[in-house]
Each structure stands twice: as structure tokens, then as C-alpha cells.
Image (cartoon, rainbow, N blue to C red; front, side):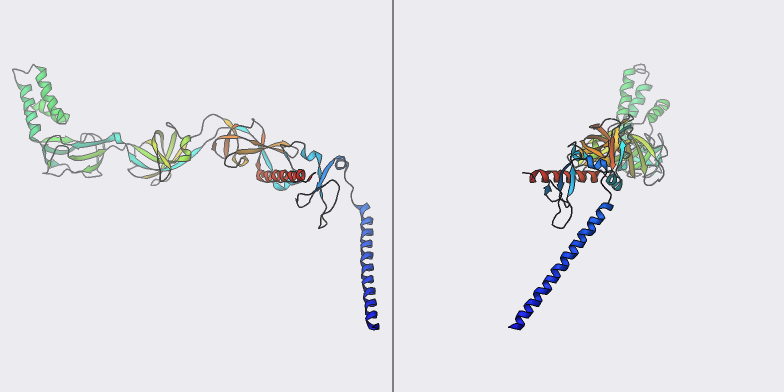
Length: 417
């Protein structure tokens, strides 16, 4: 029993010594803090003149206090001054925070925006420059010129010689009419007979030879109607051609089309008459200048693109059918418009806003309406005046700061009775 009492007394003595030591240590620490306080710099006069509104939690919790205090971890509450919220529509940052985040502003100014739309495409033949040689009556091909598909021919070059009973009959009637002494002076008979040859598509050169020689040739020479490339050759020597059979197809490609695919989102900026520069992938470094003359009125539902046609002179005949090309369309306006850098715009999808630099660390968010873009700038249609500075870097950090302050303000107002 005595041993137990002795143990308890010893335990109580030890506990007392520990408590006494802790108290002495706390007293010594308090004394050292009191000795250190006079050596700490005092608040400046400007800071002392600022009126404190309340103290907020250092970790952003919804807890405010009208007097200084500490949280459960011993961290001091942060003072919030009345002049921090003079304007509810602005955000204020300290000079140090502005320097650390790299905030930079640039004034809105008038510029000429060069908006270039790039689109791929292919070279197509001009539909108006394609000719077909087909017989209008039953004919027999007696001779075919030494030309093949892909051969370049010139206007008037002989392509074939044909014999046609219908053409020979019409030619004999015409020669008889113009050589008859009885009706030679009657122009109506001659015009009718000549028109019959023309209806059979007999070349003018062959009709002129008949008028000069007053003879009916057995074979009539057919010539190329234009300069161009033979796209199709179905004529074979000795064959019989029925009316409507296509014997030759010739295309003039001194002028071609570049049919390009424009993304649906860019279609509103493209108009007929805009200049375009086309580059062929087969000729790097070469440029072909033209202009848009047609925008096709339909959208490809698979690619969501629209087709536009650029007419291109091709004097060197470098551009050929189905060649891949890339087009640069200049959609910019020659007139200067009010612009800001694209980096200044904060786009939420449904709204666009910028931050106006009001000076002294204050920034005002403002909604804007935008127009064309190009060269790193965007046109401002409404919301900003010429010369107003806008934040072009770190604007999202300022936006995050404003959201934080708004949340803290809402917490503080909700916490107040």
C-alpha cells in the first residue's frame, strides 16, 4: 500500500515539473516576442490612414471578423480595406502582383486587317472552252490525222477526212445552184443551199473551197475548231460514224478554273470579286493570281465546305486538269478599322469580353462585339473607344482574381448577421 502511494506521489511531482517547464518556456517566448516587437518596422502613415472594413480568413473560408484574430492553425486573418472596393465594376491588383503575373496593356488603335483564308482545291477546265466534234449525218472516216489524246492542236489544224452521202448531196445541190445560168442571180436559192451545208456542220473552209472550184469533193476535211488539248479521240480510220457520235473532244486550257473548298465558318467572309493567289503543289514557288467569280450555292454535308471558283490565266499551260492547288483568299478590307490584339479577348463562347486598364492597378471588365480577324488582331465593332488600353497578357489571371474576390465578398456578406 505504501509503495502504491509513493508511486502516485512521484507521478504527480513529475507532472508538476513538466507543467512548470512548459509555462516557463511559454513565458520566455512571450518575453522574447515583446523584446523583438520594438525592433520591427512600424506601419507606414499611408497604411495607417486606410480604414479596415473587416478581416477575412487567410485560406479563403467564409469567415470574417471585425477584429484581428487567428484561425485554428495560428494564421493571422487578412485585413480588407474599404478602399479596396471603391468601384464594384473594377478589379484592383497590387503593383507587386501586377509585376509578378506579367500584366501588359496595349491601346486599341485603327489598323488595316489582312485576313487570309487558306483553302485547298483542284484545277478544272473551263466548261465554256470545250468543243466537241460530232457528225450530224451518217459518215465514213477516210483518213484520221496523226493526233492522240493529250496532243495539243491549233485552230484550223486538219483532224480527219470524211465522206458523207448527205453532205455530198447538199454540196452537189449548192454547186448546181450557184453555177446555173438561169438562177445564178437569185440569191435566195443560193442561200438556202448553203444553209443546208451549214446545218450539216460542214467547215467554212470546205464550203469556201466548193464555191471556188465549183466541184463536189469526195472527201471533206474536218479541222480543229479551237486551240487546245485533245481530251478524247474516238475517230478510227475507216469507221462509220452515226449522227451524234463524238469523234473528238478538245479543251482550251489557256484559262482554267481553280475550284477550292472553303470551310463553312469562313464562308461569310468570302465574296465574288475577291483576289486570290493560287499555288500549285507541282510547281513550288510559282504563284497564279486570279479572282473569285462564282461561289456555288451548296454545302458538302460530309466535309461541311462550300466550293468557290477562281478563274486563272494559264498562258504557259502549266496548270493541268485535276492538279492539286492551295489558294490564299484576301478577305481583308482596305479601310482601317478599330482593332485590339486577339490575346486581349476572353471568349466564353456566348460572350466576348476584355479588361480595360484604368491605371493604378485597376481593371474594368467590358463586353465587346467583334468583327473580322487577321494578322493577330481582331476588329472591335462595339464596346471600346479608340485609344483605350486593354490587357493583352495575364488577363485570365486577373479574371481569376476577380472571381475570387467576388466569391469572398459573397461569403463575407452571407456570414454577416
